[in-house]
Amino acid sequence: MNEVDINPLAAARLREVSHIPPHFTISDLSVHIPTEVYRNWIYENLSGRFYLGDRLAESRNHSNIVSIACVAFEDSAENTFFTLSIDSIERSHRDDITGFLV
Image 1 (spheres, helix red, strand yellow):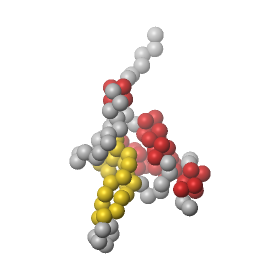
Image 2 (tube, one colour; image 1 turned 120 degrees about the vertical axis):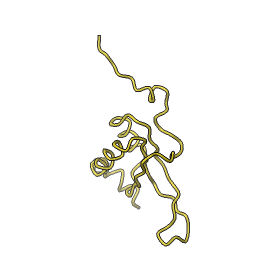
Image 3 (cartoon, helix red, strand yellow; image 1 turned 90 degrees about the vertical axis):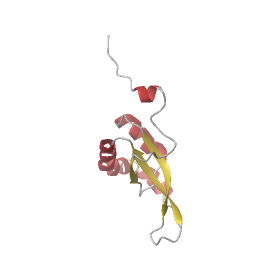
Image 4 (cartoon, one colour; image 1 turned 30 degrees about the vertical axis):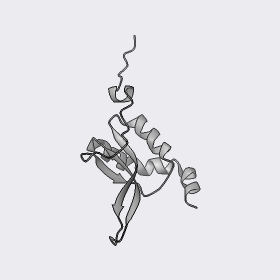
């Protein structure tokens, strides 16, 4: 019989959170490909909790608030792995990117 490890967070549908808790490590996303591409990669390659969406931040000149696409991870090691892999993720979905850069 094969032994299968079940991720309790995935089984309870608790991996993706709806807001960014203060202890999560945040990385901004500069190239916009469909969030489903990032989400699928995260589910396939990582195991912890994460946030994928937008966050509010001050503009560079501090004159207004802007929305920035980002990803955040509970485990900073997963954030590092994602950050190191992002070029590969985006390169493998170049066709998806060109549709967004109109």
